[in-house]
Length: 63
Image 1 (cartoon, rainbow, N blue to C red):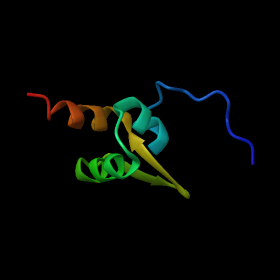
Image 2: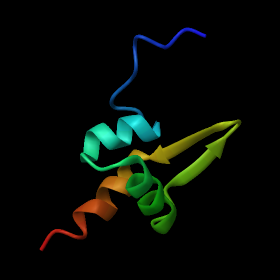
Image 3: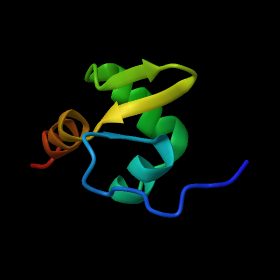
C-alpha cells in the first residue's frame, strides 16, 4: 500500500497522526480528547478528527 504524498494540512477532518503533529500531543491523548469533545468520526475503517472542534477544545485549556 502506498502512502499519500500530498496531504491537505488544512482539511476539515484529519488523521490521528496529523492531529498529533498539530497539537504536539501523543496518540492516546489525542484520541481521548477527540472523544471528549465529540470531534471523533469513524469514516469507513479510518478514524478521523474534526480539526476545528479539537483545536477549540485544546484552546479552552489555556488560562
